[in-house]
Image (cartoon, rainbow, N blue to C red; front, side):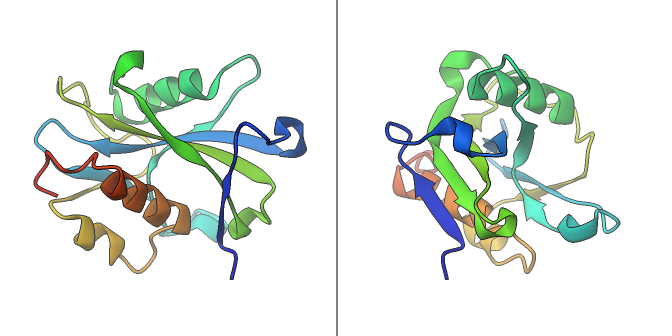
Length: 157
């Protein structure tokens, strides 16, 4: 099954996607993986565990969008140089019509103040997160990308 498609950004037609989203894997200052679980009244997303982020607004770059979304959803303040692009994916969940720009950020300056959209869920291990029964496929992809690229190496995950 083709649940996740990694998109080659150099060859992609950006106008062919109905929506653009920009999401972020977050490691907290104390080296925990921070994810969010959607409320159980969120329709088809009810109870899903995923990374933080949201829609790219008109006139925004994906980087600007994820910086704004993380501030809105966690209070976290991302310095642009601290944001690492992991890749862009589509999901069968949306019939591959939405492009998700996925990033990584370590909140080394302890700027996160809470979780203001869903329920915050912290993990001390990558395996603990990946074994969650309702983790989104693209979140598993993003966590594996972080691991494969060595972004978790300096943390206790």
